[in-house]
Amino acid sequence: MIDYGLNDRWSDTNKDAKYPALYIGDGVPRLTDHELFDASFFRLQEVRLTYNLPLNKVIKGQLFISATNLFTITSYPGTDPATVNSNSNYGGNYETSAYPGFRSFSAGLKINL
Picture: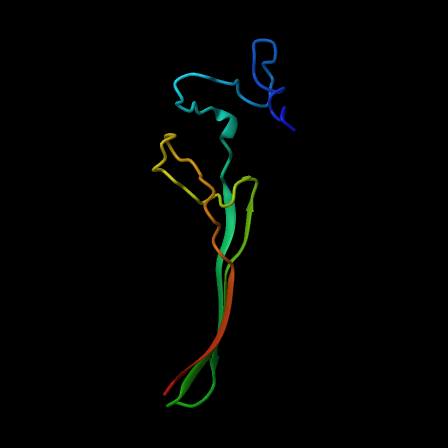
């Protein structure tokens, strides 16, 4: 729809609007607190379980499994609450759609002779 967001802009008669007022001028973007979000989060970054194999005194072994980026709990609407792009022309910290960290799982066997 072409009128998406146009009818709910701030004005003298609509001070409780969802979107900031439209601005036409020098082309410099004006930052408001409309795009300011709470970026607090809880993240399980890495889990690693290791089991030492009971082989003998000369040969030692370990069996392991690990996982990274299992989950993040946040109310932040962006891709990653830990993303900070401070080299922005908009001033301050501004997220520009960075990719979130990937989730990975691994398992292995380590033997020392």
